[in-house]
Image (cartoon, rainbow, N blue to C red; front, side):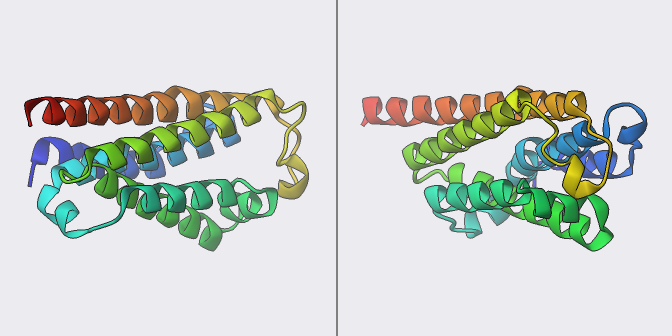
Amino acid sequence: MRAAFLLPGLALPALVWLAPLETWMPVFAAHMLRHMTLVALAAPLIVLGMPDAARRVRVPPLGAALAEFVVVWAWHLPAAHALGRLQGVGYAAEQASFLLVGLAVWAGCLRDDQPLAGAGGLLLTSMHMTLLGALLVLAPRDIYAGVCGTAPDLTGQQIGGMLMLAIGTPVYLLAGLWLTGQALRERGTA
């Protein structure tokens, strides 16, 4: 166990779940900050903090990336988003599924035996996170207000999309590029 990674990895979800983020930022932005903290910050730290446990989870990197794609995009469909935002059980299911697929992606992609596949999984994840963030930023209206029964807040949605772009895109992209570099160095010394 590597406490330097594991402790912050466990503290981050507690922090974003307990902090009254909605008092500091728009509701949608707070919701997105929680998502991104789970999948792009807490999950890799937990995996790095528990390398032996992560090694035992033999998740194929691209399969894990596909699972995360499905979960992330499914929860951003309007009806599913409303369930996660407005109902306690939906919120718990949404948060748990984000953390689980985040752990699967990082455990699968950070495997020592498949650095290029891991890089591919992380780079694909970076691309779909970038696309979803851009869609949220560039949408001409609040996508979720009608289904959530809230006043339209396009600015809050745009801030949420920017958080996705500012957190998810660089984390996955840089980790994918680092793994690519690792794989190329290994091939160069072989």
